[in-house]
Length: 111
Length: 111
Image 1 (cartoon, rainbow over the protein chains, first blue to last red):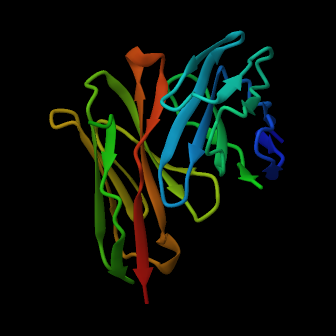
Image 2 (image 1 turned 135 degrees about the vertical axis):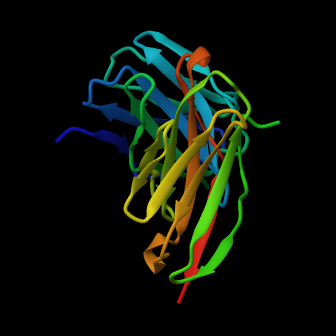
């Protein structure tokens, strides 16, 4: 089945650790996105990528890093520089200028 | 000013009521428009695209007003299952086809 897969579904991080969230899609979409959602809030864009080996910062990129070495994959690393990383992270992909398809999300909690 | 703005609500309506949400966008180069539905602790899912001529899907009607730069969603005969957060999404053509989300409007349909 075609789709977008995020893993893990739940992730716990100790303070000062880097963690990487996985996002894979087999929809052959050019664009991929990472969003952060805090409780009761909307989606805020962290990073997005329109093509392989290219990505741009979104509104809240500080403390995060990404790579786009393959069209199918767009992993997000939450670094120790991100001071308040506990949130719901959503990855999406889309063909150009049309709708986005979302993964099921990763809930990250700092312990 | 945010690029895409929505009234966060909540809108509390009785079953069977008609309810409407608006979403304003600031960038006149916005090209494509969508309404997404997000259930609690789940990923957003496409509800409907918004076409220039307006479009209807069952009890849901979407309208676009380019002159005033807003889109609307009308829900007729509300059901309990319509309770969710409704996200307005805009694709800005001159920003690399980046999808920008509004903060969402929460709807609660009560018996």
